Image 1 (cartoon, helix red, strand yellow):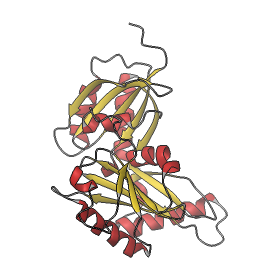
Image 2 (tube, rainbow, N blue to C red):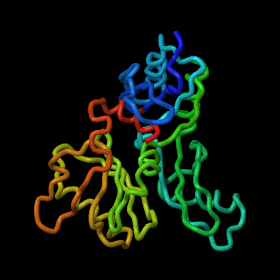
Image 3 (cartoon, rainbow, N blue to C red):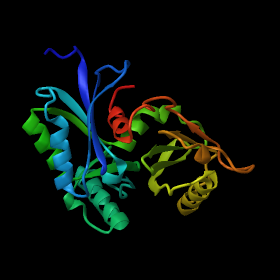
Length: 269
């Protein structure tokens, strides 16, 4: 059967489930869920089994796919280039040192990418090499053409960064994890991953954001602009002076599962 012209695949990968969607290459239109699979347990072996079950029986050979990884599988951090840095090895070393300072290990087991810059702070992202190899192996077995492997937060930031208002912070809420971008002026200062406890309300959110602002030496945000389904208790201020919360992607993919929304994040706006 001939596939629709301009249709590409989106694969969402999280610790609990994986999802495969078909979407338009140019954005617009409704994405179609082709398959979803739960992941039976932690580790790459159950994840590999779920990925292989996901693509089994699907007409995926030769088709391009963008892979979106849940933020819990990735690491994001800011790097300040050392004074006088002029070569790529200088800033790669700075990124490795910062990674070690934050996570207590070297980046050897991680594939690191960044918007490398010798004179200005930049952000780096790391994906476990074993996970990347697993995704590439399953794609090769199925003759899928992997176009991109990207963390969930990066997809949201790239899409919505121009919509962030002065004084606001940005966040991606997905499956109980809130990834927050602390912003000063128009500069991204830090990315923090916050586990949202069951029953969390706006007071919890305001306290956590205030703590992060204090640790970073920043003013608390005037508001927070989020992506992802937003529980009413988290959005509604409980008292005067708390932080207004708005959702940027209201109604986009709300009918999908958490894994489906992850896959959809790889589609063009």
